[in-house]
Image 1: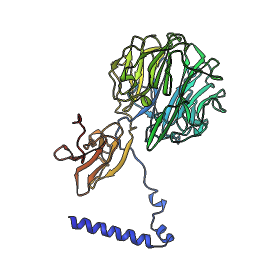
Image 2: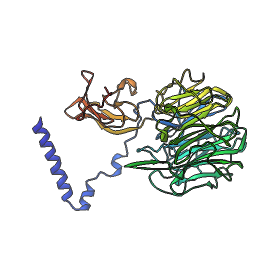
Image 3: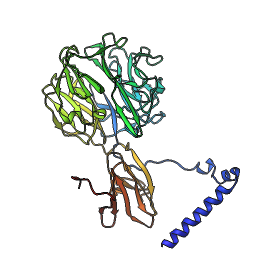
Image 4: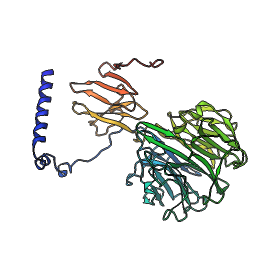
Length: 486
């Protein structure tokens, strides 16, 4: 067997050397023309389970209609409270979603900011802001193309043509199309109304539910590099506008943390708009609260569960009908009923939570976005809709084996890896046609070319060999397993 493999490799090497010894024109003739692939068509083979979702929205008073945006899978809509989801953004050449906003005065009008705001090492950028006037059936590009990553979009509750966008800008380098942008004509023209410098973007916006002229904005100095991630700097800060976002004043001191700030998220209580929350990444960070519309602040919680990985999970949401109820999203979904002093875990469908929408007319109606997709609760978080009906998983690498029909392998972000059949006799490839093949997220999964029942994979610097026949996985890591990791 080894001799056959060596002969095969030598034969392939000889062919490759021969090809590269030919003139460029002759080498080009060896490449099949595009017409050779004209009969091929893409088809979805699953898995039909969710991947990382980072943006959500609903329609107030319509308990069955919701939207979510995937980190790399477009925008999806349900009209049956999550029983089924339909992709509505496939015609747009921007798969990464950062924010979704539905106009209160006309729920047929939607704005989507593309490019997720979580600046991971594998972040995908977007293509600006898109608008729909028919509840997501069709979309129009309304500009801000070079913003790359968008953290938030808000629409004036009375006028759907007035929109503000929090643009982070380029994740990996400086650019000037970042900060807060405002339009008063539905996206035909934009004005940059809050800007610090080419290294600082805007990550969040929050409008007073009782007075849309009062708006808070968070600027974030941040840069992602392959060898480094820098969150925070002198550009970061919390700002307030009293004229609908035309002019801004920075909020400093008065109980807010001093020194270098990082990511900030803001929420205003609709039950009492004097109550403002700010989740702040800083040396003395945590959850800060104001009871006088931002004039004075005090830290109400430094609970490690709400400030863990603050550059990634600094999300806070105020219940619109209960002034002391507030949600903090992190690796877990947390809820406080005492104004942020203490938090308890809410049972949810997955880990690593990124967005929440609460119906202002009914606090029991929720949609949550996390690393497993989006799920809906109509009973205040006691039960949730399934995430096994939204094929938005992000996969690292692809491999195939030599079986007939062959199987495809990949590792899903924040989930297991999978082996998926390329064919089923019944014509439908479903859950019975896939299985975990030993490893986890973010790595390679490769079958042995001599025996497809032996599968090698890695996840978070650990390596394993999976025996499909025995249904056993064995660690083959060259390094010792980390203490405490079994």
